[in-house]
Amino acid sequence: MKDTMRIGTLVGGGDAVRVIPQIVGHGFESFSLTFWQTTGKTDLVETGKRVQELAAEHDFVISSVGIFGNPLTNTGDNSDAIASWERLIDHAHLFGTDMVSGFTGRLPGVSIDESIPKFTEVFGELSKRAADRGLRIAFENCSMGGDWGSGDWNIAHNPLAWEKMFNAVPADNIGLEWEPCHQMVQLIDPIPQLRKWTDKIFHVHGKDATIAWDIVKEYGIHGPNPYVWHRTPGFGDTNWTDVISILRQAGYKGTIDIEGWHDPVYRDELEMMGQVHALNYLKQCRGGSFVPNPL
Image (cartoon, rainbow, N blue to C red; front, side, top):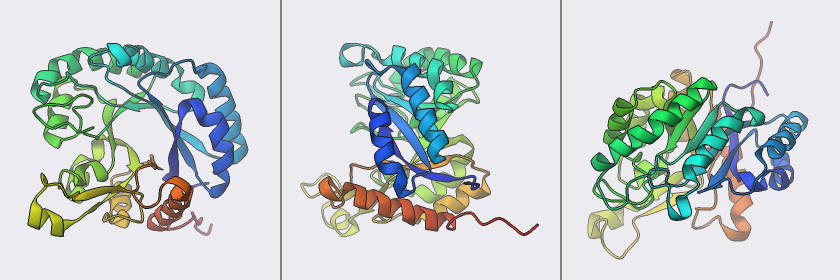
């Protein structure tokens, strides 16, 4: 594998050793390992060792390890969120990756502006811890149902919020784990946004969306009828050839990892059918398989 942009998928960190051998044969070139709210009882040393053995055998890379909780509250079900960020930062090298990803967190029930001071406190320290180990931090751009005025999980879902975040913590090693879907559900055109923010995009999730513009035009976005659906790439509205071209022109050397388990059609028993379609589709949008130039 010589291409500078690999196509892969997300796998639960605690299940990686069990799941990766079952699906790597479909042609996935990278895996992003994720944990929900806590790394829990996962032995990161042993898991990292086993995953690296599989990577050597099957020629894939671990693009990132991620923790998706609320480190700004760090209480209740999220009481292990900051410790999990620290754990993954300290153990990322064992997985062969230089990136830790996740939600920024948020102070529940208040605006993004009111959450910025706590974000600065928490990620000012975590970004330094990561930088000391040569690591980057990437924030997913999912709203998790929040908006500017209120929410429970994440502030990194709007470009004005990104400006505030990166001004508050002006560290070169913090950026975005971007995908078009989370912008499209806000009716933001992802293509001009991508052109503007390529220097801060460290990781890309392969997730798309379908917008029902007929419903938007007749009923708006607050009626009873759904107006947008998360989709697996190849089934949504995004021009992924344009996305990959823009990323390549900007010198992006990362991966695109499919975030499955959201598509309303290719789900349940059709889940891997949809993901493998997305894998092959994104490879074609990439230009196909790598072909070396003549000497």
